[in-house]
Structures are given as structure tokens and as C-alpha cells.
Image 1 (cartoon, rainbow over the protein chains, first blue to last red):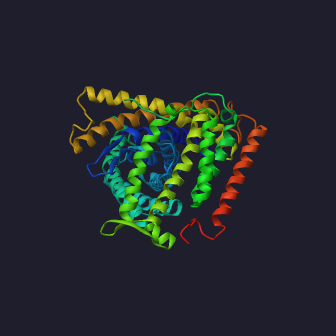
Image 2 (cartoon, each protein chain N blue to C red; image 1 turned 45 degrees about the vertical axis):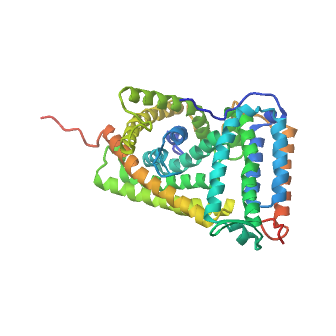
Image 3 (spheres, one colour; image 1 turned 120 degrees about the vertical axis):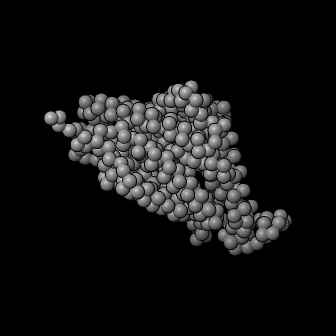
Length: 186
Length: 276
């Protein structure tokens, strides 16, 4: 292992594959919620899961690289303010990764609550604060408009991650072997 | 499920011959300059320059036409939203008011608003040709090398290169899983009710994520066996040495950025104001 400097090999690969998943789900994985211009973006549930699995640095990079590539490949040009917001989501949710221990197959009620607290804070900061503020600074868009957009996007992402993200984590934890799950046979 | 995406097409033009690093530096400085300025004059000059480059690059319109439709839709919605939320934004920015005609209630079309929204549009339009050029003329493999060249850690550059390499694979996985799920009657199209649809989506996401996690383990084991990350530096198969053209392009963009920023802030404001 070359843990000495910077990212571990596993994190590098996780960032690469995670960004590829972000791109594909960002394009195909959004479900219209019935409210105009508000989609259920399953890609943020994926970002949350990968941030939990691989930590905050991987979370930031997946948000940054995944969102930039998605915008660039499908829409011709990255919308920088929202790219940075995605990175913030990955960072803050990633901070919870050490406290959850999902690789040990532990995912009960306390972990579920902790995960959701982190994701609500992450999405709130990113979409209610970072994205609209950067929209104003970079693109000088009207404040009313960008804060409303941020409010809608943030709320819908919080709900999406709360439902799909939590279910994915629960299901994922079940596929891991629990620590200390072996018992000695008499 | 057909997907249109922007991909590199091997052609021979002066822009294709430039090294990826020079183009990356050019694009980044270009984007930052456009973000900073709200000066109509420098934006118009830059747009003209970008369109000339697009012409020089010999890229065909059909390679990126589909993106233009998406951009147009996004554009229309965005500008409608700006007007709906803040019909007098331009008036408060430019400090004067010239009414053209009223629509209803507080919605009055003013010259200032039209000019402001024209500038917002212009800012966006000026970045697009450069982004398109960068993506269509740079080989993905060389892209990672150029990221490293401009000072980004090679680990991160490698992550980007893995992402580009695996987007088609992940897409194939997604399609296979979605088709297999549909064959078992798990529908994610709009024929299902919303709650059902979300639940079915999870049925597709979980296998996709599990295969991806497995893939991460395989790839990182393979990379570790080949001693990836042992040294502080690495070389790139696709890396190209700088030629005089590359240096010329970098000097050019620095000049463009400096002139545009000077013109913008010469009157002490970020906005060019023709109304005073």
C-alpha cells in the first residue's frame, strides 16, 4: 500500500468510477417528480453513498469531477456554481463516513439518523447557500430567482437522499459481513 | 437507449495539433475571464474570436448540434425565470429606467432589463464554443496528462482519466441491469406510479453500485500490483512536449484576459453601462 502521500489507490479508483456513475445517473437516473423543473436526482443518493464509503476527499472529488464531466459531455459547458455545490455535498456527507462504519455491516437506527443529519446539513449548505450565492457572484442573476431555485433543488435533494440514499445504505450494509459475526461451535 | 454525447473526433487542424495542456490553460483562463466581466464590448469581441476558432477547428456542426438544442431549452427557461422573478433587475443594476411596454402588473419590459438579460446570455454563449472546442479537439488520454501538466496531482488526473475511460462501461452496465429488471416486470418508465417508480429505481441502483464497488476493488488491486503511486512523479504515454504554438496560445490568452479585465474595470464597475 502506498498510503504515505495523498490519496490511496482505492480512493483514486473510487473517484474515477464514482464520477462515471455520477455522469450516467445524472443523465438517465432522474425521475420527474410531477412538479415542473424539479427532478428526483438519484445521482445525489449515489454521491451520498460513495462519500460514506470512501470518505470526504473522495466525496469532494466525485462531486467536482462527476458534475463537471456530466455538464461538459451532455450540456456543452459546466455551470460552475452548481458544480461547486455538488462538491460541498460530497465533502460534508463524507465527514460522516468515519462515524458510521458501514464496511462492518453495522447500519441500524442510530447510523440512519446520523447519516440523515449529515445529509440534510450538507444539502442545505450546498443548495440554500453555496449554489445561489455563487450564481449571484458569477452570473449576477437576480437573488429571488436563484434562492428560490436553490430552495427547490435543496429540498428535493434532501428528500431524495433521505429515501433512496438511506435505502441504498441499508441494502448495502446487508451485503457486508458483520464484524464479530463468527461464533465458536461447541 | 441511445445516448448522444460529446466525444473527441480525430481531425487535423491547428487546434488539434496544440497540446492538451495549452488548451486546458486557455479554456480555464477564458472561462474565468468571462465569469469576471459583464462588459458587453469585451464579451462581443471574445465571442467573435471564439466563433472564428470554431471555424478554424474544422469541427462539423452535426457533432455538437444536439447540445445546442439542450442549451436553447435551458436558455429559454432560465431567461423566463429571470424575468418572472425579477423583471426590474436591469433597472436596479444600471440605475436608469426606460420603459418599452407593459405586460401586466409589475411586469414591464424595460430597455435595461433587455440589455441585462442580453449580457447574461452573452456570458453563457461566450464560454460554450471554447468548451466545445476543448472537448472535441482533445484526446481523453491526453486530457489526464494535461491536467498533471498544469499542476494537478497525478493521482487526481488519473481519477479523471479513469472516469472518462469507464463512462461507456458504466453506461453498458446500467442498460443491462435496467433491461434485465424490465424483463422481470420492474418498470422505471413513466407508466408506473411515482412511488413504485422510485422503488424500482432502487432495484436498478443497488446492483449497479455493487458491481461498481467490485470493479473498484479489481482495478485498485491491479493498479497496486503494478506499483501505482510509488513515486512523486510519473510520465504519460500521451503527454506531448510544448511547441512554440503552445507558448503562443498561452501568451495570447493571458493578453486577452488582461485586456478584457482592464476594459471591464476601467470605469470602476463590472457592468458596461450604455444608459448613462
